[in-house]
Length: 180
Image 1 (tube, rainbow, N blue to C red):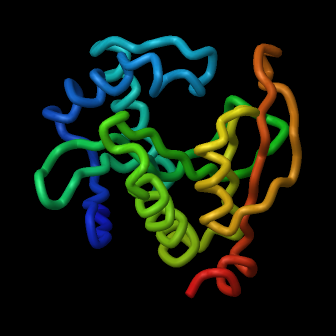
Image 2: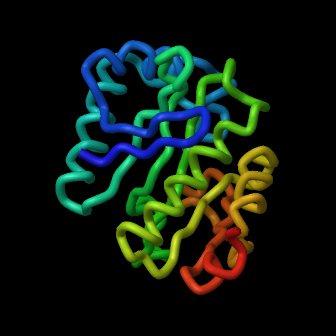
């Protein structure tokens, strides 16, 4: 079982007791505003999602981590790596993503967590390229991609035709030169 630690966070695999707090995050319209069509998810949908994230760990050797606050043990949300099947035009690719509860915004936690996931992808899994996909207008996510050293490579429309997205990327050779 892969576990990563940062100064403030533990990135770990999912547990049954994570379902309810993650469902609460998924029930917040502000959190979900930039996720697909902005729809909320209930506890059952969250449970199904977590199971899918765990299956990706088994099939790909990477996945989405539960993000736990070291000092309190509280679940803050997730970060990690996944294959962005929802946007076939960027495949083959691995995406770094994050979603934190609103009480954890504005503290640099998403950047700290995502940076650990990127490091894991390049250093532990030997990935050559990692992308991040953000809806146009999601300035907070775009700031995180900049802090990760990613660069904009394209703007396109989500396959549902509903929202414009920007695709950012970081290649392993760039990671080496941009990461201390």
